[in-house]
Length: 310
Ligand code: GRG
Image (cartoon, rainbow, N blue to C red; front, side, top):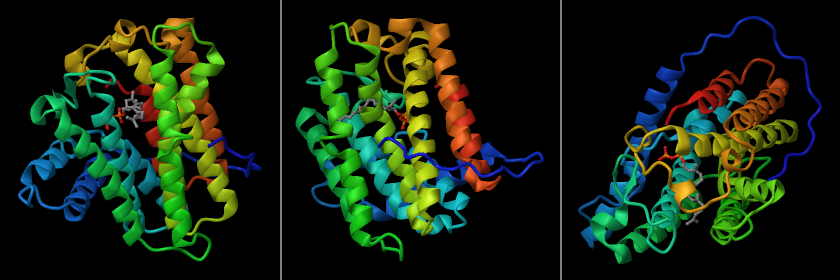
């Protein structure tokens, strides 16, 4: 979602210390525990589908979307626990999209999150169903969440549906598939990144804010932040695809080039791509000004996402 303009408030001055490693370790553990509570056990009948869902969901993803959701709630003065179901729902949708993206009919990948892809272990049919089941699981989780004075329960459901629907996540994937092997413009590439990546990151920060009953100005700031962090995230992802090894990434490196995908590095080169990602991250920092120093976790996450090497 394109952000609305937010009037900037002066930031609180002074150094902020934030232990991102501790934040990510503790939040990943909490998210994993919550996810395990939401999902049927891997032994639940039929065990194959539940094992397949668990396999990809607990394969070691970075949990960036849940982290952004929880950090956004904290920035708005909310309880992270209130954001937890929404953070889990977004991770289920993200994992479903990865399972389907890896299928032979899409990107045809053998490795994801450092392990064999879902279809390589369970077969294509079960992998399709595991993706479907995780998408459905996401909506079951959101259906059980609660609404807030400013954000009715239905609005939360709508938020998730829109971000993952045919105008956003799916639109990005369709445009990505259709763009393979073709020369596409920078504007078209931006369209793809906005949808296949930024939409879900933006949805994560917005849901975090909503779970804290944030003000409209805060929601606009979180939209602006999530949008720009999402765009930077995809450019970095494209850069890592050509600069890192498969072992480092836990998935096949160099796939974009092999599939003749349009990426920023392919269109404008690595150095310019790095500069654009840094500029987008600066824009994301700018969006946090209304939080006046209370968005330390979001700031740290934006920096990490820009500087990450996997
Ligand atoms: C609906 C099938 C379908 C696809 C939608 C999300 C997507 C489009 C495709 C998945 C592959 C891809 C390149 C997505 C772009 C976003 C992205 C860079 C995903 C990888 O996210 P990370 O790095 O992954 O957060 P982990 O494994 O750490 O969670």
